[in-house]
Length: 216
Image (cartoon, rainbow, N blue to C red; front, side, top):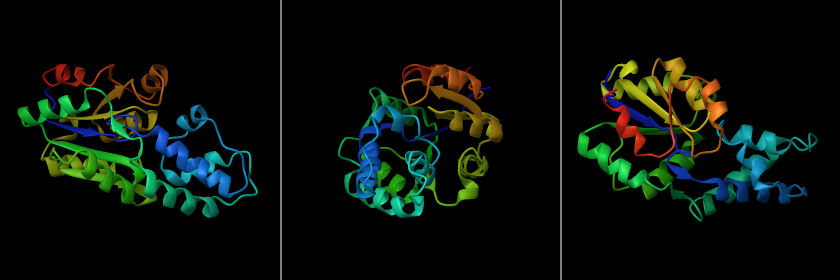
């Protein structure tokens, strides 16, 4: 069945944001008097929203309330979120090609909306998205399918005709829950095995491979 719309995750799919996220987490750790985590550890905690990220970053410090660290991390990230962030190789060319084909595109992230929207608008201003949605309500956080389903309705596409492209098990579960096509991006923050186990129907190693799926 042809794909008539594409919903992208942001972190680890469109944008490599690991460096800035890790810097923000470690800024929060320093403020709490804690040692920094290696970036490799923080990489495994990305994808389920900033509160969950901070909670995981305090696994060795249960005496520190996550509510105390979260605003520090968010404030630091707001000031530095585009210091290192950049589109993955091939993403601009992919967005050009999808635009030329008239394929509706959207962004659905578990990153707080206060960060998701301005970042997407700054980096991807050249392209048109029917929706750019980040984390606003806990009950709508991926893998809850409602955000994805609302975007499909905006696209005027049946869920089965929409691909959800992401790099994490959370993204794949969201796609499955929404009845969409789960497409796993292997260049992000999770392994191929994790993405497959979560329900990926397709794995892609480069952004351009999405174009091969449009008519399959």
